Image (tube, rainbow, N blue to C red; front, side, top):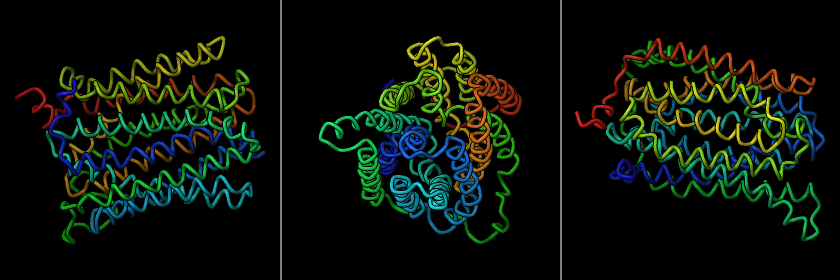
Length: 405
């Protein structure tokens, strides 16, 4: 299995390692936000859902223009911009309960996502090359998930701060500020990477859509947007759902979600071998389909322990498809349109995801704790079916390399 990771180019490796610290910080942030704002700061869960929607809409509005700019003026600088804005977001959410300022923080967060969406994957695909693209994305997802999982685990360190006489609210704020600094330090590693060499010239680049890759991009985005709408009702709200369903605090749900994320990372190491055995498209369909069955089963769990096992298994299977999907879309689009295509596909995933988070938060707050899982499962099935219909005949160049053809 580890042979798949030998020979990843050095600059791609720098980008992989640079993603670890922001993932560490954002893992804590995204896991804890649905608990921290309502339970510690007194912000209603419905407002948290609305803030998630603002993040998504901002990301959608900024990712396409930022993707175009990254393709034309340099992808590295936009990766750095995303890191700076992400750390700023964590600080802002830690220091205020004012609704207007929280909205501004959500806008900053959306801009950070937009900057990353159009530049980081495209720069990684370029630096890795065709024969190592799937391996590079798998290794990146491995480290990012490990970092995110450790970030979720770190929420339990609030109790350590409290043992030294720091109040619960102040302990959470201190945790957020420390992680913002950690995320910002990744810029030092990104600075070692050279600027992109696949930038677009002015010829044939007018308009907001990538001309050469538009057809395949729209099909990919259509399937992704459906599954994103389903995921948004559940995944960003899990710490809040666990509190409502079983009465557990973030110091328990955070580590559980951390275990889930770490296992996602470990299993991603097997993704290139699975792609070689099954093919990229078939591997995506099998892992997502298996995950859907477990998504439907989560609300049937009688206790927190059972729910944790089912949800962790669901997350592991679902997220094994992430590096495969990144490799698929960036292998199908034209190299000089990768940032723009990444921004568009990310935007068309993030918008329905953020809208449905508000719907999921409303349903959970109204007492319909199982309904979001059922709706998500139906949407997953529709998306997987369309994905297979559109792409079952696709074979990427790196698949031929992996198979020795």
